[in-house]
Amino acid sequence: MHAEERQQAILRRVREAGSMRVTDFAAELGVSVVTVRKDVEVLAERGLLARVHGGAMLPEDWAETAPVPAAAASGPAPAAGGGRSGGAAPGRSLVLGLIVPSSAYYYPEVIKGAREAADALGVRLTLAVSTYDVDTEKAQAARMVADGVDGLLLAPSAGDGKPGGQWYEELGVPVVLIERRPEQQASAAEHVGTDHGYGARLAVRHLLDTGRRRIALVMRGGTPTAPWIREGYHAAMDEAGPDVAGHALFLDLAEFSGGEPAYEQVVDAFVEAVRAGRVDAALVHPDHEAMVLMQRLRSASLSVPGDVALVSYDDEVASLADLPLSAVAPSKHEVGVTGVELLVRRLREPGRPRRRIAILPELRVRASSEA
Image (cartoon, rainbow, N blue to C red; front, top):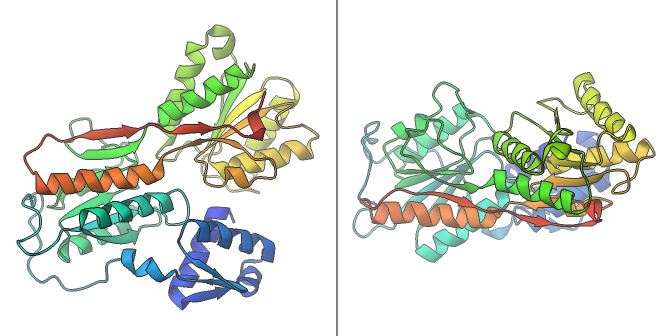
């Protein structure tokens, strides 16, 4: 079980029971108490739960962003595609819905930024977590609309080219996409997200500056951010000239889990490429995969950054690795803030031009890629 899956399980238990004992949950998952304790520390740092002696409980302010309760609509839902453009009725503050795929990895800072922006603008924010399931997202969005939200912030799970990828345009309320782009170029949907192509370029240029020339990209190619990271990686390699571009290597971890033969084949191929001198640096997405690779390299008596420099992508837990990992860090908090600001302005000024906003990530250099 990956760290994100464990953390999601911890959050579910705490929300269902109100609290959790570390020792009991570690035994239930079949992992060490230290592992669960570290997961609790990560979640507590993000404000998603509160640490107590021997366990964890919900933070006092969780109710401010609790999921919208299922409730009968006070009136008929808007017609599909009709669109509410006038915002809240007189005397009522705006209500925004936020639907994200995870509350344990990547999105906690987005949620925090959105909540702070909503408080500053005097609007109410309600939260739902879809666990990367598009049918769940559709049901949550329909429920929120029926319950009377004025607009939605949404990180849809449907990938490029999937049927129904733009279902959110038929909800009847303004929608701003978060860390996603519209499935079709003709879509008028507004969005706020990280420029992941720029982030990949930052990583490659940093590795080039440290003298590396055989730079690989290792990632889960099916994630929503994967196309943009891969595009930025190849662009930066091409810009560096044929001596660098000729060594480009993409290794796709796909949806494999640790221990599966297909996963182990990709990891083994990477370690062998380092051993043979075909790779001297790598950009790895996400963080925990970079941690796995670093452990495998050490087991093979290969050193980081001596034999190979590593830069991870997301910077969720990169700094917590035994050897702190350099990482591309999207400004997740700013994405949440800007998404709320964009949607509120859309609701209060319905005739204004629509916008698509790309926020640049930064590179945080640590021990794994120092020259």
